[in-house]
Image (cartoon, rainbow, N blue to C red; front, side, top):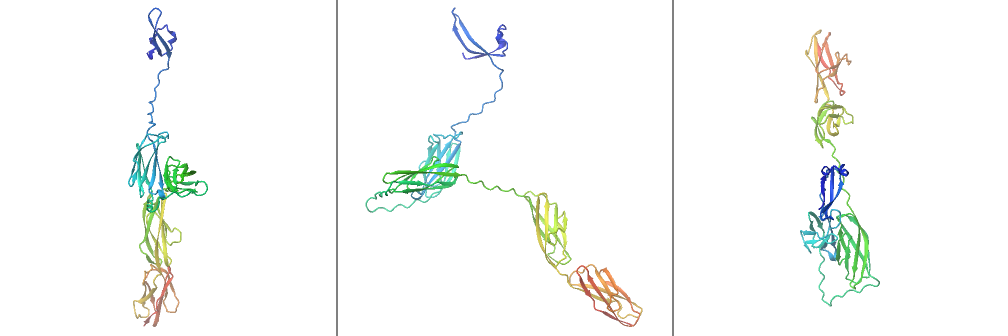
Length: 456
């Protein structure tokens, strides 16, 4: 009858053996005939712990569903050019090969020997591609899909038709047929070339290649190419059969490695692109030009916080501002490269601009009296004015020779132009007045001609 579950409280209180049970499981219930003709029920009692919650079961994984699709190819060369053997290996969730899985092959050029193939017990399905040029091949197994480029050499030209007796196999060379095969290495997804060395063979020979990944290729060329889809070491075997029916084989190891990862792209550093302009690209020495920095923020750079100005290009900061403009005054004649360095939190940038500084133009000074021919004892005002082809400085040093004896009796340390001095003559005759000016900033000087007046 299976089993039944009963609550211990439903048992007679005299059944003390069950008094400590909260639940009682009745197992193996069956009826048996009693000696007196009645049926008796055999019951097995047992106590069980209170029921605890059980987590829902994990959904079962379909062990027969394809979870890995690996595609390889063997490309014919020489006499086998234009033909490639394509293999697809299908594996389940545990990595074991899956047999009886439909695999679909499709190509954009050439022809396939079969476009629908079922995997064998080793999880392998294969087809032959014949194409005179490279082809893009698509392979599908279940929900998995793979696309690859299959390179191909043009097929060799057909041999000329024989005009004599039927060709016969060549006579084998002396000695036993021998085959050698060297080790090879390549990256995953790249063609690996295999070439068999054959001695003492009766031509023509046929070659059966086994590449260790489930793929095989049969052809007439001593060379072939194979592409491995996964890294590892693969045993490669070539079996050569000559026209005399003799066979020999050689083996080697193909070492396949994954290509190195692409170089890590460095995280762009916040920075500034700066363009510096001067309001005047050519200035007279000791004059100034207004410099302005135009700033572009790159790679998340914050707004600039300071501008360091090197006006004369000697590597020393002459001024630091929080705005993008300043005035530079140039003290040296020549081409000066002014520079600004823009700084912000975690970012910087700089720019330069050339400024041509030219020498100041020469100075001239002339004197004009307010009375051309004064009388004795009358004061005469002499006005000296400085002129130049360039800018006129704001102030000069003035030296006056009021009596024409060559000695400057009056010196004025700094005064603008024009400058006027009053002179009174107390004797008749021709009198002379002269003035000399000095631009103390540039050292330029100018001396007037002696101005002569007649006192009567």
